[in-house]
Length: 70
Image 1 (spheres, one colour):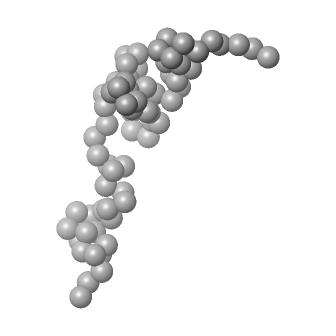
Image 2 (cartoon, helix red, strand yellow; image 1 turned 180 degrees about the horizontal axis):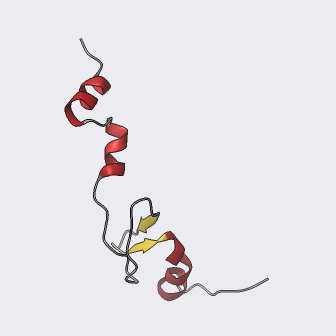
C-alpha cells in the first residue's frame, strides 16, 4: 500500500499542499496593478482583490482609515 502523498505526487507531480500555490491567480487587483507570480495579495470577503503594497490605499479608500505620521 502506497502512501497517499506519494500517490498524489505520482498523479499530479505536486503534493496536495503545493497545489494551491500553483493555481491561477487574479490578473490584477482592484487598483489595476498587475498581479505577477510570487506577488502577495489579499482577497476580502466582499471579493475585492488587493496587492499587499496597496493595502494602505485600500484601507484609506474603503475602510475609512486615516493615514498619520509619528
